[in-house]
Length: 342
Image (cartoon, rainbow, N blue to C red; front, side, top):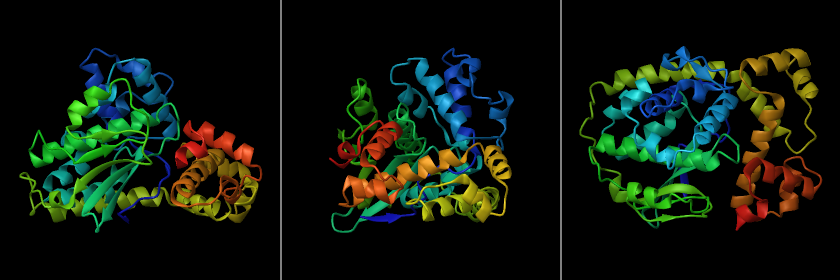
């Protein structure tokens, strides 16, 4: 498999709140008061209606936990199936103008940072089997939310693709989930309209290459250049604001095998530890959170894509004791390293 347009699998800085806005609107139509969703999030209720309003990972985690606390059966299906291109503003408008399924999926990856990015999406091509995989990886690193987060994104992607293709019955060839079969699995099998398997290494849609050329009837090639310029402008703004975090991520990745210390990072950046903490807090994160996310992401990649021993993997990301690494990984993901490798 050759990955295409793969984005870094970690949550960097703040993201737009578009997804939370449409979720709150959908649940409001079902009689759910907004205050129940915003409880303990510090999210401004008026902010959700602002296209420029941004939130951090911890706010999304709390918001999602408030959703699950409602105990609505199949809630990710209810929410994801309600999404429309207009809910994503400029991103959704540009998606509508894409000429075919290939350009649609590639744009969604390249510009995913324009919306509420809670999963990493990547495209993997296999020339031998003439099949492709559209893969989803959780970025919230909250074990109690991983299943909901992935399910919701899969439903959103299929709902949008059906809308863009103007085919309500469109289905990918197969869907693989990395988690166990849920109680509401029959509802999902009915919605996705394709064979679904559970307990896989990755969560991903699988489809044959002949689907690449499916046309999007709402395509507008004349508007596309202008919209892409606007998308690039917004994306450049997002990147410049996150440049500080990118530098920190690179430092941590380069020193991950060592005992990491915020004071050493601050020194290398010519900052005081207090200034470093303040700058990270302004971005809605902390040194400890970034270290945890990068170590978890690196560990998952090494476990699934190499034959290194669990002890060697733990050592390579800064754990001298294998039992401490196993305990930390279980806390991060809800499963043991050995279970993930199976």
